[in-house]
Length: 403
Image (cartoon, rainbow, N blue to C red; front, side):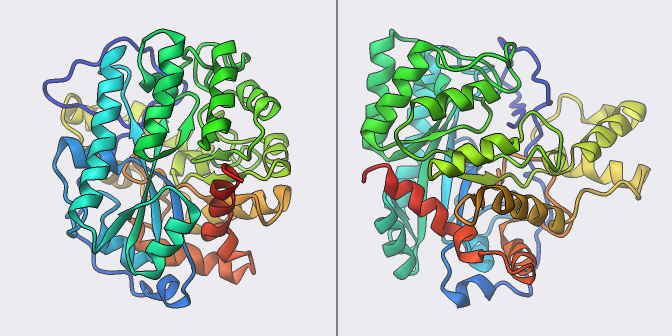
């Protein structure tokens, strides 16, 4: 799931529409007051890790400084502290409609450099981490742990096979610790859930990629991939995998969500499913109704076409005015998905993969990362394993890559 960046200078070409339109980023929200229960996670000392946020593009393209409270978006260090989020995987995502072939590889390196430069410039507030021990040390020292994941192996570029595999090693050396095999479209490594051949799986080069990731100690991420690709990954891998930002299909029938048979296989191999916070994935019926509303009232939204990324909040406000009864799912629905992963895969199978700064609608009652305590309260009230879901499961998977 990804954002349709509409820079005035960009011309998006080369990719057909996915089954689910890419959601717009939410970068125009009004400033918010701190969450009233902001200290809850921090006061317990529990480690909370988010395995997927698309904040990196804002840092590179708009110069957003995460060390300061920002007036928009979902993530910055002050709001992470308020919400008790200890660590975050910043996504290295390359839009294949804008960056083609080898341009994609250059873009990936620029995003990686942005994260590394930020960590170097703010050593008292943040730490670039690549191991579970480093994450724990950063948390103990009061710093936010920054990790990186490459979203879509298409970003390795368009070179020969040997060069693409070698580039995985370059990314590992720079600190990248997971790679999502595909994004929304099929690529040379495998097939996507929203690609043109969702019944197909890993390619021979994709199998080689998984083996090299196992060798290097890079987590294989099965979000976005087709079910067949995910099963093929589990057939090949010798290490636990993550679904870094996917909800559950049993509760919400969407191809981007993970079915129960895959939850079981991922969990049986020591991996985990990190639930996405996107309202349209948490409640696919809501997503259908919301898209139908925009279609039926297209004139109300016409002035937003062709404008920049500052449209998501306005679009949501228009929809709420047209039909006040059409409300996104509540935080409890997000908790339902996490509870379902635990029910199907066990306490070690669930984790948090928000997709912050890459989605247009969060659950009702959650405006940004500072509202994480509302989810924690919901999980606690159900006597779910908060520490495991919050971060320990992710650290286990990360540690298992090198054991």
